[in-house]
Length: 494
Image (cartoon, rainbow, N blue to C red; front, top):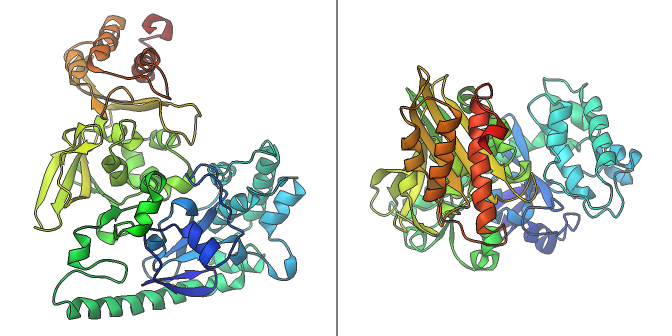
């Protein structure tokens, strides 16, 4: 049984864990303020907030998520908030709603709820806000009526109001100012009680099943063997939502042992369920790769990054998976565990892909960790992507590059490319060509030409063979121009 708080109500349901949160709130609870739009996470009309109890049990961290791609099972133990859960009494407007009205930010109104929820999530953020973070909060919301300027003005006006938010006990201030109802202050205690009750029940189930793995949201050993592993849901709930509703699922999103980013000596270790947003905000990652937030802004939108996991991007095996391409250039490997035998093995990420959507792992193996060697301070790293839309779109072609240069010569190199073959590619011949050479126009031109021999693009809806070959050449050139702007020029390379 799934248990969570929906607005101010405790929910207990046996609805399928693989069904969508959107369908549950609309059709089971009849909360129709959350709209059905694209059902692919693009439009943001279905945005809700999902709050998770933080260590210590005193605070709840809220994130915006697109409910059309949120597995219902991922709500277990959390606080889900729809627009009905923030609306003020007697029909008055919250400061966020008032700001949108004052700036003319709502026309047909279909998308408005999503903007309201995203901005409410921003107001609840545990980090100090800025005009930039306020605008970033609505990067997953689309409006076809307003042209966005009125919504941008409303967002900046809201951020001005939030400058008075205290750093200590901000929730009390937000409730007093009407941003959220007063019941939000009771949620930490309620989630703590719910977690304790759930753990007690789970312990009883485990004892009664004589050692077989089982949790309130999980599965017994026999069912787990035929279950679909489900993380953030951002791929599978687009590809086959009806099948997921009808089959057992094994939920791995949010599992403590699969979360977190840490440094172990010279290695960086990520839990498999680390989300793209956690990657983007990680102090460890940003210290090593200062431009990582800039790169990850090209990967979907804030609500999707809040949900999508790193391992999920790997295992989806898309030839254009952004995180896959990024980590291939970092030389990452993955730790796989056979859930039946309990055995673990480490596999280089580039060896995971053996054919289109084919993986070098058994059905019983799951990703536990991702690890890679920490780049040195003088190393070069860059990620590039071209898509039909700059943001919130899948790539036509993407690429990443890592270089180590000593004494003016390339000592080591890794290049990756997506959208130019049946699998996410590394370009070993091109990398080998660079090693031992000095950076010059001739060296880079030679690398660009050799890369063309390592790829095998096909024409599809994202472009022709010729177009993709041209894109990869330009993206590889962009890496070198980013690394060595004083030595190279665009006209020389192209």
